[in-house]
Length: 496
Image 1: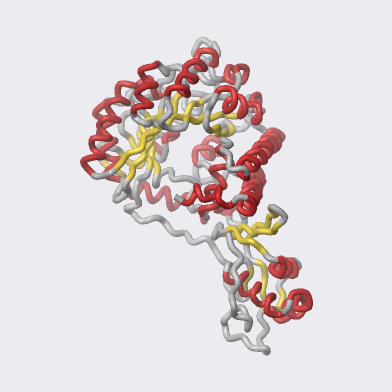
Image 2: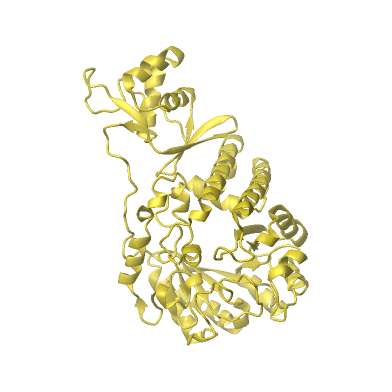
């Protein structure tokens, strides 16, 4: 975040224009927002956050009605700020591309694909496609499933051999990266605990041989957290995310056993033992929001304050429109208001240098601080891949086992042609609905799986989320600006 002060006061364009050739300037693409009594710009597509002083605000206001010559801007604003200050502001706004020449070609997001040897940073291993719960909204087994595991020839449980092949594949594809990230997923991941134990031991052994490190994480519904499992998780410093939807009546609405019995009372004592005994890594909760369980503050405070999770993250249920648990238009407005309420709480904690735990806002302000500008909405098919129980490599864990979304196998290698055909088709530059959206550097059209379920096409932007995403991104920008002014040291944690 900056407000530069160039010293050239003789003009802003450097194109040799003379008094006979007036230079007309116009606004480029940005999103203005207010925070801590100051005005900021979120620049698009660079994703930089830029602080505006008074002359700069006045320049942009003067250009609100359309293009104006540089001389006319100076003439109009010099009585208020002085000619040197106005010209400095013009030069700086041109430099950061908040304004530009009307004669210049329109700035576009370049359709640049990553290099063919782009390293794999995270591999998600679906060690089983079986689960001991029967969650109504489950994307893997519910009404919107992509793969019917009852007919799929792939094994229900990944073998030790396939897991070892997957580890070798991960290290091979990680290139020169010093750390590889291995995430275990399911189904219910802990149903294949024996293979988890063997795989972690093998991955550590291979990492030592290769001079690398490996970071482990795991997602579970918490129902199989025996003491032996908890001790193993702690001893191996495995990051754990527990899928849980909140207090008993919310958890038991959809997260049920196959006989219809709720899972809250069964899972909670095990989760509390996990939180008490696993101190080597923070433990997070992942909540699926539905129309019937839309009470974000209550869920958050129950899981953080009463249960004891370090962080809590929320995602609306992924489902086709019209399902009984789908969040509809008014529900998105309600969800936004609840997110904003927690974001303000987060801000108060951050200004006081206290941990809050609302991961949705933390993750977004980290991306803002790092200047993330995405060509793709996530790392799926690029820096992140999912492996099915038979070793088939998919775009991500949500597509594991889907032939239509396969890009290779740990046994035979990546299909680079198919991988780059996918990336070329899904670049944000190809999503015409995103071309004029100021939030595209952080969104890039949204989740592929969501688009597939909602529209039947992974290449479609998630248009039903657009207004929500813009509003939420604006909220996070305001939180970021407030922190940057009131406690900038807090943001240093995102610089490592």
